[in-house]
Image 1: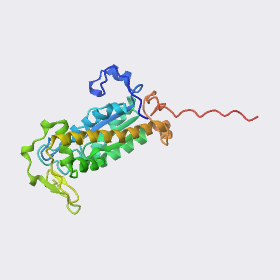
Image 2 (image 1 turned 90 degrees about the vertical axis):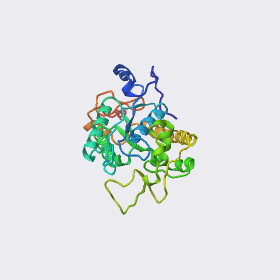
Image 3 (image 1 turned 135 degrees about the vertical axis):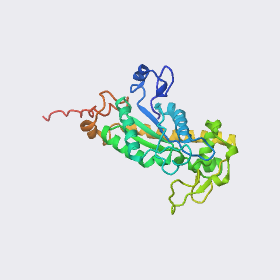
Image 4 (image 1 turned 180 degrees about the vertical axis):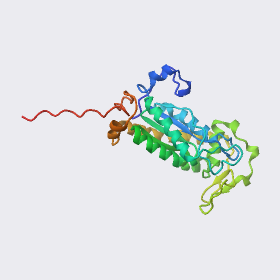
Length: 294
């Protein structure tokens, strides 16, 4: 069982590339699921500052057709306290970041999206994204998920690359080598860039732009064929996980949030897709009337 496929005339799923009338024709009638990439700019070993933006954006585009989803423009600045002080780093404090992401999701729910998946590319964002997701779900009734690809694909890194993942490590470097090789700089590699994360030590900034965990190094693997295989496996696995999520969301239809939607929702009437009558301001379906007792 798969999400209903879009019949888009153009086949374009990136919102920023659509005309406003095209979007009105597509959402929510043909597609009501949104992938919203979220990342940051920060030091990443021997890959570009935009690694945490590039990967979730490209991953969203790769699985969008399978999920019958649209892809929003990336939110490119995030919570980057630990590496924000290194060259090129950006840091947005958690509270305004949470509020901003929540505002983006809320307006997207008003536009007709009833499923929103935050495609997270940066670990520092995670706690703030959880707060934003919870607030938006409770306020609007929209279904929200946060997905961190590197956590889900740890086993894929071990199997294909032979080493565990890490910040700017084997997994992120392989992904960038597959999708944006011009943003990988092998001649810059120096083993001293790697730093082992220790629970006993919290430092601002972290003294290394490649961070590995659990005592196992995650040095880059400069092998294009394996990098391409790794990315293909990531896309397939992520597609499996998220397709299951969307199918289950759409199948369940009207779970617990129905009361909040009727009382607190602020969306426009008509939001929703074929599998759900609507969200936000649209009240839950009427209960069938029982025949009077004779």
